[in-house]
Length: 467
Ligand code: PFF
Ligand code: NA
Image (cartoon, rainbow, N blue to C red; front, side, top):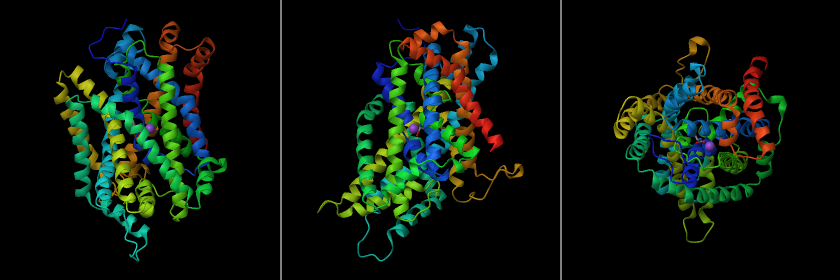
């Protein structure tokens, strides 16, 4: 008994789980989580991030995929449809527009970093992270140099960015997604195992406990309002919520799927991957005397150091080359499965509202996004001191502006609007039917959707005004 729809549906619960997991687990967990933790002082930030995942992220994720399933259209049309159906205030439809715009913007910079991971697959395969034991140059200098050379070269970055976008456009435009969705079933276990290997390596650095302490011992004295907002923003970013991506995926979801159960397992998996990445990286940071606040280059400098030391783990096998190549390949694939989800709201919208074919929609949307991405890749070299909003006293590069705008504003505020709409506009009976949990759990969930989650988001924004 599925709602009639113009779009195809996932063949099963599994297909949705795979796609949504593929969207959630990505660069956000492995590249971004460690560096934002580092920039925001560690333990207290992690605790706020976890609270944001459970009190805000999970309810928003449930509400968003449910709205998608109720509307069965692109985020824009879904919101318009639900607004008309519920005779609600027209302004709610902004949720859909915010989604199309933000998902395009997030992809523009995500693709640049995805390009770094492609570049690193090639570096790893060419043995650049397998260090010559006879060399007198310290490993950190060699590996740090590889990263700074990459960033300093806009043409090379453009090549990798373009390649990444081409792969994503190829997959989305030709609709050849099934193979990719399936690949999540082996991608996740392999990523998991490799992260465990890295955590194992981190234990041998002698600074493992310092890493653990940094991640888990909260020091609230240095938790600024900015850090709270960053924690909320990262919780939204890592779960892919607030900008219609999960709404678009939910729009293909059969009515028989249990949303609460599915969503909770996706969120837990996402958290575990991020924490493992943190446990692998910080001990290396301390052991090598690197800066925790290193920024976006953090994993691209720390992890190759770990790979380099693995050179002689197994006699006769170039373990370091194999592990490094495999790791960056998995990272690139995880980035691709997230990136295709960002293109989804844009393409679904172009198809539906502008009447474009899937292929032309993808080419047009992808082309514009590719172009906007150039501002991000220049933010790491020619434009690294160019602050477009300097006149307003905001010293951020294009990359930093886009990331702040999407992750810390559009995603949390989009998520706020989504829970409010679900909690206050959608009738309780519909919610009960869409989110099948026990009566007690439902009462709690209803309280979250209507009050706790919106209050939490509002509190984070308000806290900044006072701290
Ligand atoms: N959740 C993805 C990650 O953690 O890498 C990033 C992401 C995907 C953000 C989809 C936003 C989005 F719409
Ligand atoms: Na994530």
